[in-house]
Length: 159
Image (cartoon, rainbow, N blue to C red; front, side):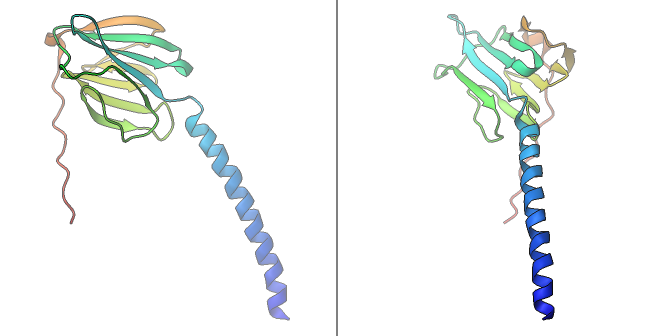
């Protein structure tokens, strides 16, 4: 008799918890992805001078181009467009320094041809100085403006 009286309230509580979890999960998923990821197009002109075109439509950034004056793309360079919606991606040029993609567009920090490029929703940070986001702009990065990144920590083998 005691067991039957506990089964019904426990199953009702389980059903309510399951419905609440599904509702909150879908709401959180929508909040994480609603603004969309950063899009970066890696390109080069006919002389081999590399450039990247940054896009983030929800922030009003339609075409923000960075040209790396004094640099050359490698001979095996293939132009590519990347969407930073997942953390494990390979860059055609440069390296990841940091990324936080929990809530898109998130924060992405890259070392591109020795220049520090940080994509933050409120501003673009180039070699330690802030540049406001503009819908269409072209900035030239010269070798003398490079600021070295601190070295990345070595990954420790835990096994």
